Length: 548
Image (cartoon, rainbow, N blue to C red; front, side):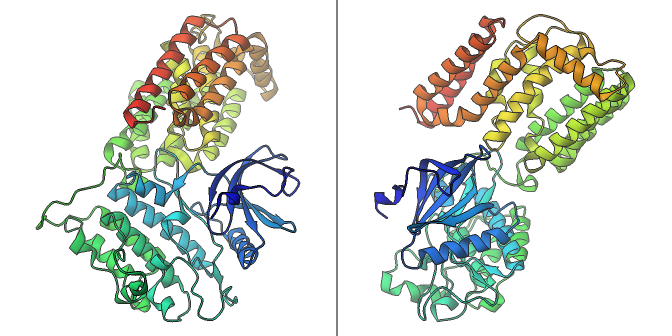
């Protein structure tokens, strides 16, 4: 597609509400822009499709499919509309890169690739249950979300076929990308759920071997090669577990009736990850460099699960010792329970860690306990899809205790998405203030002390809210500091992408805004903490080779 694909039809609001900000992608059907919803203030991914040929019809079909899908592995569609020249679809905006880009840059390990395929199959199983066949599964239609854990989204249902729905193509026109088309489609057969499973098999074979199973074949012979089937994965990767190569082979069975369902294949792949590997019988294959695996909880390496588990245990200890209630022995048991629960289920561990302070607070003031309980429930709901990072806000009190709260934007980066990172940092500042108040210790960056936050013995929610409002009025820098650090947390990945200049600008803005909005805070702590933040980011950027 030419560069004109990025041209906007009009500088005005699209559909009277979306303001395009910058292009973020393009493909055969149109371009995608990062846009702001002027009604809600949220960022969306706005797909712009010209009304040419079958593009408008496919866009309508894409919206119909997306509107029926309700699964965490499918990007949500918010709105649909058009004008005389274009069709528009507003999607939820997810930061990340396509799986094609991730494979080319070597960012996916074997375990990542297997879990990514399993998550694609999760999305397909949901779609298949609704009678929707994707028909164009390929790496460029899979989004790898930015974050500490591997999370993918299946995109582009523009070629989707529905039960009892007419196809969009004429007789003899095979929709989809040839390299991932199932053999039965090439011989005129209908697209079925098995066709999508074949495409995932090709994608996973390609990810694990480092090349496409049908590359190197002259274009006129590609169809014949596909109809003959791919070479067994075990011949290319003799070191992989037999259960894994068998699962991939089952997906690439030429006979569509013998392929497993998407749900079954996803289960087989996840089971195969922990299966014994074959002994190497051939020469060692040069492996692609891969970062620490970012897969689902069950497949994550132990060292990656220990950090959230340790954080849960620490937070339980803090929550149980700030106010007298739990005995020392029971506190240790609760901390161990939180850690073990987080290892097994981050959501369970998060729930347990958040509930520990409830009874001690109720012993001090029932109204305070009710208020905290409501906030804890809201926070649990907010962290439901990113439970492993749900307790990062408690790094605020830890950093405040050593005078380094300016490092909070970096500490909350494992949270997925700008909104989560920003809210984690914002909550981290208030968590630091709450811990200082409950301890009767000095407030962060001021040295002033506040006793019990003024809620001890409160008998009504109004009294608790009034005490908090009074505290904020006396110390307005709380909100200013929290807002600046939240903004820095949200923008930190963008700063890193721009190299040293972006990091320096982020640091300068953080220092300048905090000192301007909260001049009573300790300038030395802010400057030193921000300098440490920038130094860490610069070191990581240099090591990654991104230093323009």
